[in-house]
Image (cartoon, rainbow, N blue to C red):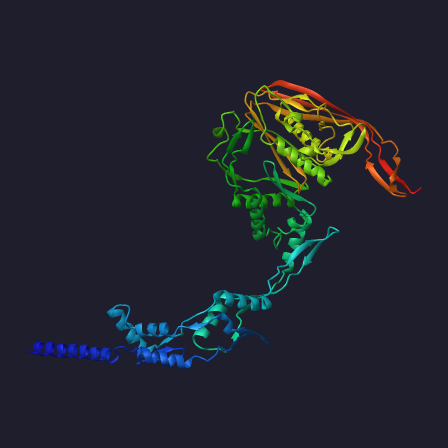
Length: 577
């Protein structure tokens, strides 16, 4: 009997609760549930239309000016210029869906929770994000000051000076932007204080003493980082910058230095390209392995080098970088059937101080040589490969040596190319058939080179020739950089194991130039002089060249050069006398 009564009571309670819930939902049919606010204004128990009208009534007729402040300073932010558009209908839809969109049990829990914790909405709006960022950044730039850490500076007299650094101010851009958007959405146009963090720079005296001691130990020294032919030298102030406080090392600066070095050395793998047309190769790219400096290994190597540098009497430490290589997909050998698969020789020269027409001729000649193929057993003739040298074929007037004088003539500068081809052929160990030195020493050919490694040409009588005495074709490639006044000639083929050595460079019998010569010239005004030839010391030069293969000498020769002393020649004006 009692159980029946309890069941009746429970059923009645369940019915009552269900009735109350139904009446609650019926009361808020097409209305927003209780305790929902938009921009501080309650919109509970309102229909969607009435809620929209309520919010519209809050919107200002025109957006006011916002002020951003820092201390006593203030900066206006023009809201009208941000293209702000309040989305009232979307905001009301969001408010209406509170308690209606996440499933029956979750919605019931949310509605119950809202009795104790009201739901506060900002009015949704659209705006020009780029314009807001531009305006905020402009204000931040006037306030923010980067922290300048203390540093040691190497002075011109070799002393080490402490640069104390500077305190900084950092403005939190993300926090500021969120605060602005929140206030705009809540129609709160009160001034916004910039979120600024102050950073104070201090130097511990003991750490300073230790850092200065390390700086004294490594100043006037250098760290040389190498990979194959590439060399990066860290010295002077760059080296001092790697010192950390306390006498240790600045890990962040070392990591940054390692990254910069990697940028210079890293490269992707290059697939080979070989396009053949007629007697020349029209497009050629040798296969090159990709290179990537191991950042972690580079940092360790730099630190180890610094430790050795600080603790040793030597003024230089050489550090070999760890580089990971990746093979190209297409090799040089696979794109041709001529046996050309690798670099077998290289020649380089610079021509700083050349006039514009000479540079033009150097580049033009290099272009004519580029892509030249030399079959096995054939003799390469420089003059034949370059062809006619005249104004008609694109050459310009520049200084040449002719009949014992330096004069302006077509093709001045071509000998820069013949000299560089000579150096490449020597390096490749190819048989030199014909080579002539210049009549006198020319400064261009002594830039970064011993005296006597030059080859003059003057068609048709004076030529430079070498023989391809390898079993496969060889390919000549040229590279000119007129901004750096640099010329490179590369010879590609198939190595048969030969190795060339240039040694025993010598210079003797130097003789001074004759006195300057002045020649009267009636075409120049009286009193005016014009130099047309430049003085040079005479000398004799020689070097030895040996080519070995499998322990056997296949070429051996001494190249001699005899340079005449050269006098400066001036034209002296006599017009009107």
